[in-house]
Structure formats: structure tokens, C-alpha cells
Amino acid sequence: MENRVEIQFQLSGHDLERLVIAGSDLDYLISLPRDRLLTHTEVRLGAGILRRLFVDNELKKVWRSVGASSVSQPTILATEIDTALNAWPPHWILYAWAGGAKVSSAHHKGFILGSVPKEEHERYTSVEELLEANPMPTRGEIVRMSVDDWLGSTSVAIRTNEVGLVRISRASIIKYMANRKGGVHFDPRRELPERSKKRHRRDTESILLDHGLLRVGHLSGPEFEITSIIHAVATSDWAPEIVRVATLAAPQDFDGDPNELKFWTGQREADGTGWATSRFAPQEGSSHEEQDLTGKS
Image (cartoon, rainbow, N blue to C red):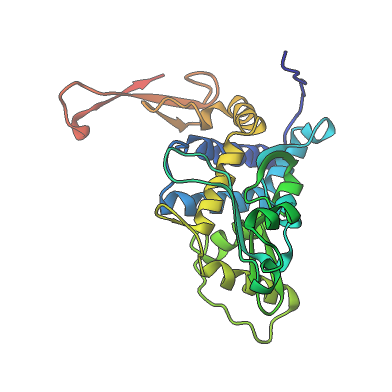
């Protein structure tokens, strides 16, 4: 039997607005198709929403405002590749991608590509002997993580000659797609000189991600990572619950009648709230301009 905890809460005006925004954002992510690869535009829009929810910490603020943080923290079921990467000699790894979105077309649940230096594999008499001495997982495992651990976990790892294996977190992938690749901004600049250490790291990650290295159908590797992140959020147990709570708190923002036009009068008329209502009454066979508005008082 499913365990549920009932929480009673009161919201200020700005907290209610934040709840509606987060609920609407999550409702959009849940509505995206999971039986096909997303379009480039869906990925970009999704990246902007993910940035707002997880980088700007809107989800945490909503979680606190409705009192949920006192009883639980949100978790995510997603592909984890750090354990697999840790089993490899770092200089054998070329690159790795977490992925995880399961669609009817091309997809993957962790992808690791490596190359064993000749002088190291020659000491073994066969591939089987090499793999027995060096067990190397080539895919990730689906595990449940806290949202913070999930954001900090590796989404992409790419080996470089200068600094070795660079692990790029899910939070960084979100920022790359949202801030650099058109989710919120498009920024093609990749200058490395005279940058702070933090900015230098960010630019290095962006340059590495620009190389692509992996394509899934029409999506680049980073775009498929965003698709997988969206799938993980959309299939969580807490995302639809936030949508439900937001809908209950502000039903007019989610379930308003599309055939009603409401306007504020300041008078205690109509339904007693000061709002008057005109109802749109479509007539069969008429054009949009010919349809009637029937006032209701």
C-alpha cells in the first residue's frame, strides 16, 4: 500500500505564483512525448525549464514553501555511470555518456567508449584474459538518487591530453544547453585566456561538449542528455504531485473554461467575487468572427 503524508500549508502571494510556475513547468515536461526522440526545439525549451527548476533552485523553494522539506526530499531514478567509470583505468576512457531516456527509436542507457594502449594489452594472451583482469562495465545502472546527488553526478566524461578525464555533471549539461545553446541564451564564445578558474572550467566543458562525439538519431549527445534528464523528472513520483497541488491551489490557472471571458468589475456581482463572466458560445458552421459572446451576470 502506498504511503502518503498529508501536509497543510499556507502560501503568500509570491509563493503561490512560484508554485504555479513550477507546476506549469513540470506539467509541460510531463506532457512531452516519451515514445520518440524530442525535437531540437523541445530540448531547448526543456533546458530553459530545467535551469529554472534546478539551477535557479525554484524546485527547492517550492518544496520548502509547501512544507514538504520537513518530511522528505525529492529523489530521481536515473542512469549512474560514475561507478562504471571508476572501474576503468582513467587513461583507457575516451568518452562516456549517461543517457537513459528509453524511447522506441535509438537510445542508450550509459555509453562508454575506451581504448587500451598497445603496450598494456600486449601483456595479455587474449581479450578474455584482459577483461578478466580488468572488469570494465560499458553501460550504467539505473539507481535512485537525491536530486542534489543526481545534479552532481556525471552526465558526460571526456578524456583530454591536457588534464585527463573531465567529468561533466548533469547540472553543467543543463547550464550548457540553457546558457550556451539556445535554451535561454545562445552564446558561441569559447575564449579561454584571462578567465577565472570557474569560468575557465565552464568554457573547457563547453568546448568539449561542442565536439559532440555521439549522436542519437537527430539529437547531439548533449541534447540526448537533456532528453534523458527530462524523462527522469517527468517519471518521478513528486513531479505530478506538485502539478496536482498547484492545480488545487490555483485551479483557474490550470483548468479555466476556455469558453469563458472573465473581467474584473469591482462590483459584488456575478458569482460574488467581483468578476463578471461572458461565455463564448460557438455556433456550428460559423466562422471565428461570427461566434457569439453571451454575457452572464
